[in-house]
Amino acid sequence: MVQPIPAAKPIIGKEEREAVDRVMQSGMLAQGPEVAAFEQEFGAALVSGRACVATNSGTSGLHLGLLAAGVGPGDEVIVPSFTFAATANSVALTGATPVFVDIEPTYFCLDPVAVEAAITEKTKAVMPVHLFGHPANVTALQAIADKHSADKPAERRIQIYEDAAQAHGATWNGAPVGTFGEFAMFSLYPTKNMTSGEGGMNSVANADLERRMRLFRNQGMLKQYENEVVGLNNRMTDLHAAIGRVQLTKVGGWTKQRQENAAFLDANLQGVAVPAVAAEATHVYHQYTIRVTEDRDGFANALRTEYGVGCGVYYPIPNHRLPSFQRELDLPETEKAAAEVLSLPVHPSLSEEDLNRIVAAVNTVAKAGA
Image 1 (tube, rainbow, N blue to C red):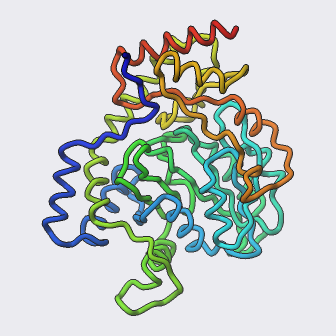
Image 2: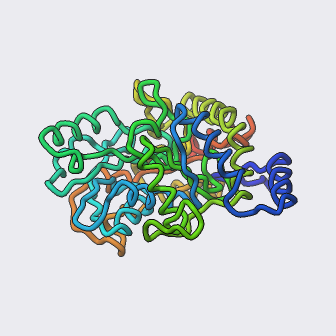
């Protein structure tokens, strides 16, 4: 029997296990020196030295970032509907309203034209998602935010927040994602390009935002029992940080391998629309997402059952149609993407044989359906 090729495969090695054991032996398991070191090292490695704040999940990172930025009831935050629900959930949890807009069809990221059309007097921010590892057009989005903020007081200027959950190391015009918004969240979930087991990391633009985020993360206090605000317990443990510190030393090599795997697929796949990359962008291929215009679900089932090629559909139900939101909106590119996208394995554990199997399977299924 041919061994199935998994759609994703977290890589945990000897170094990660040794790091966890080191923390276990130290007896300091909760947020401590490992977290502080991880925050500093992440900032230096991935976001041009920006201050970083670690959290217990990516969703917590988004939520705390929004709270720290002052988002709350009466505010609107423009978000894509074609993404994981955590993006909109984090906005809703503050009491603010997520405003869903369409994506552009080429890179699956927020459409700047749709964003501008959705701006109102209540718009507090725009939160693009760098989906599948490809950056959103932050240049255009920032220009729109600046245009609509020109005559407003500082507290009502439209801000940019980045959901960089899937985009560790991606760049736009040579600058890393995570350095454009007032804050940016990176997920450290096991299937992401690097992991801490579970967790999130926020890069922040200024010291005041960093301080507020640290307050909200730890019951509203920086010093024990000196609670300044009503806060949460969203701390990262030293166990998770120790894993993340090791992974941080490896993610650059893994990203290069993802890009090489993607280049092989680009050159050899036939009968499907392979991922495009903007001239301004460095894609880090959290997912290698193709479009299948006819019977995507049947195509995926054939890959899995007939050829043992794992694949995933992200995201079959747009956020605006989830029971938790239920909005009547006309988002044609979002609906089309939800019906056509299919993510193939691209992770760094793939062998040359795996890549050839993926190509042969996809080309055969595509030809059969032509």
